[in-house]
Amino acid sequence: MKQIGTPEPEMSFLDHLEDLRWHLIRSVVAIVVAGSIAFFLKSFIFDVLLFGPSRGDFFSYDILCRISTSLGLDAGFCFDEMPFRIQSRTMGGQFSAHVWTSITAGFIIAFPYVIYQFWLFVAPAMHDNERKHAKGFIFITSLLFFIGVIFGYYVVTPLSINFLGKYQVSEAVFNDFDLGSYIGLVRASVLASGLIFELPIVIYFLTRVGVVTPQFLKKYRKYALVIVLILSAIITPPDIVSQIIVAIPVLILYEVSIIISKVIYKQEQRKINKR
Image (cartoon, rainbow, N blue to C red; front, side):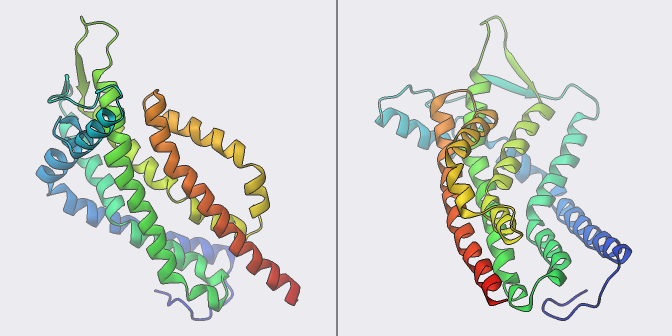
């Protein structure tokens, strides 16, 4: 394995592909190992984590209930039991859900190592002083991802389940959700939020390679607002309160990204002026 900060010999295109292949293999192995551990923690992952937002005593509903009642809003988050059941209608449904949920959990757990492998792959193309920030990059990237995952689990998921679980076109229709559909909603909410929270890291690299500038981000801030609201509408129920709750942290991340872009842009301009 390469050591960060050591000079790298010139590599051909095929050598780069081979190098990338091994980084991908190591990442997959880490995900499989973490997923295998998650596989044997079935009771905790399903009964506590996955099915937690489907119960009325879930932490987020209590907080949202207190906020909505204190603001004089509709007490839609104050309830004792969700009006739906979760069922499996296929022979291999529960086993398949167990396997794929374990893989998803493995990816979340192994995320710092996956980012570490990504850094090892791109590090040879960076300067020595940039390679010194490896630990900071891995820590910040992982921290943002985990914050996004937590936000998706405790905010986006309860908002979605609360709305969709109670929604009815007629009282004659009872909600019986398939296990795969329920898990898919939780998985999408958590992973989408985790990746969205990587926005500052994406802006960092785009600014570094000259694709975006802080002026560009400021100029199109209003368009970014519209995109964020559309994105919030996609991953949350179609009500204004839920969209605002999700949009606020994303907009904060966008503003932080502008600051990061400004710092990196100034650094790049100094390098150009020294040449």
